[in-house]
Length: 359
Image (tube, rainbow, N blue to C red; front, side):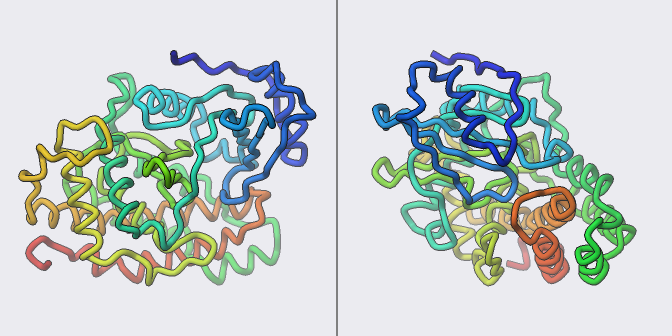
């Protein structure tokens, strides 16, 4: 039975994660004795603080408490996030949401390991990701939710609130040295939007942030689960895939030599299309659609995906500039913005000139 999450009128301080989590557990797990709960801080994310709550007597029932990063309400619609998690959980694709509080969520722990820059290419793993993304793209969020592609709304939102100056003098000096003026970024965005809006990619319900740390692989069950639906919304199909491929380069030690080759992408896209056009409702191969997936259809999607990977670079570069000013997480957001913009400009001409005929 799908129970609605409870809302707890609580704000958890980032330096008191355990105390706050104990309060949350007292409401959603009232029978748990505090002295039998072990806590583990997860450090994979660069947006939020995440704490795992493990009860000694209930090893299968693990609760995750996620505290939103400082000022991330500027970037993320938290009501939409809650709605997305419930929608996808009901569809069988996301963890159960137990509770919301003023600056975070408590939800079901998904056992497994996060993907890395090696496992994301594994022949046993990447088809699972491709099929799960295709299944998610077939989910409907109802008529009340706008079907306008969210990538343009997000980029414009981020441009509107990106810092003009940094309070830290050292950051300000690096900002001036590394990042193009806002006027140039706005002009670049206008050209990119005009180019990609005519590509013809379908609008589907997307994850929009499928970095490797947001994919959990359960080795024994041979399944994958997507987590963290902060940015999920309707968007271009090709953006979600192109964004995922861009994340093959990693986050902490970014290496775009790891961006997947055309050969690998075509294998991935074939699996994706077989499920997306099939009638299957699980992660098995959509055999009924395999004959309908042609080399031409794969080529068309390949062209769209690589064009939209440029929008991914642009979006997360501007996002990182905002995080560089507001986030309390120890991460070089300015350097990350520089890396994403450099890759955008390095690949822009080649990717925008891609056509099916040129392959």
